[in-house]
Image (cartoon, rainbow, N blue to C red; front, top):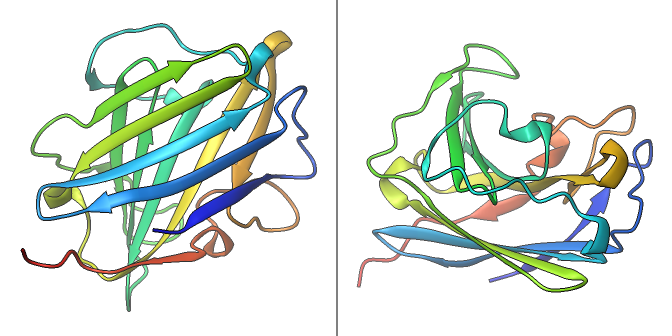
Length: 180
């Protein structure tokens, strides 16, 4: 699968983070697995472990996100995945409209691994939780560094402000999984 070099929105540059990459590792009938890699993570704020459960507001600190928009419609889904192992999933009927909790048949799995200057964050989302595929998608990250500095990373951005819900962020394509 393709690795995406995420870019920070120019109005919110990072403090010490030098790069964020994201990729889909695999997709089958049971799981979609993803990986984000944060370089220059020495000052990265990593939320502490809170347990595997649904939680709102994860985007207020370091959080990794997947947006999926099925072909031919305005509706889309948002998945927020935290190093705390908290997660959230939402449906939107159109751009930032009709927000509702998205049903997820089992908890996503979130696995952070941190070194001195790198954070690797792996996540697995149950495939049945995804909207119908094929779809456009976006991989994003909210990065908080010491002192409360936040940067907003995506494959592509709208020019005026960070907004992961923007059409510009749905910059990649996800095909339906193949049957074994």
